Length: 204
Image 1 (spheres, rainbow, N blue to C red):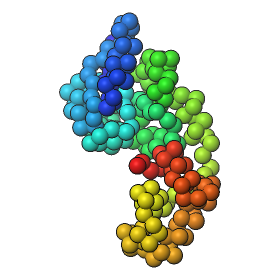
Image 2 (cartoon, rainbow, N blue to C red):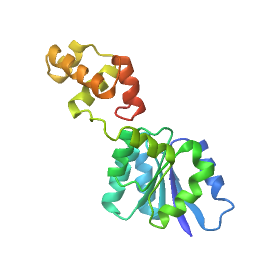
Image 3 (cartoon, rainbow, N blue to C red):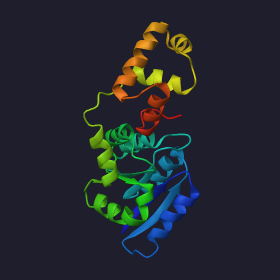
Image 4 (cartoon, one colour):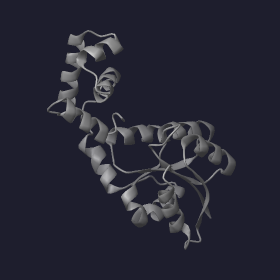
């Protein structure tokens, strides 16, 4: 019997996942959690074989929860469920120890097989997620400072305000923004922001 913990802040999604297990005798849902801290508590309590992890959650992000779980339980097998395949976010999740990635729109079709495969020691990634990673495999990554600048652009700050917040000159901020546009292949600040959110470089 594969024992599963389901972690997502949307109750409807958790109900949908629970319903998928009803007619399958080789797995059972042992616990659910609606935020990161609760996920950590439930994992410690139930020690599930497989954890289904959302990435965007209140209190602790899915990546932070995965890191915390894997520090205590290095053999934990975690499958990330996400609404869109942002390659940077996926890379972070892989570093945190995720063994599988599945888009939420494919749960009904692929979830049970993915759980069985990861439980058997395999790694699984839906084709859409793999394609997103491949598309950006050779892209030059933004530096941590460039990510800070892009995040502050997303908060509506001007170059001067960004400079003040990061203790940079306005000219240095402009230079960072030129680099960001070039690396992301963006036409302007708004386009760069949209790309940054889609790829999971920043969250707003």
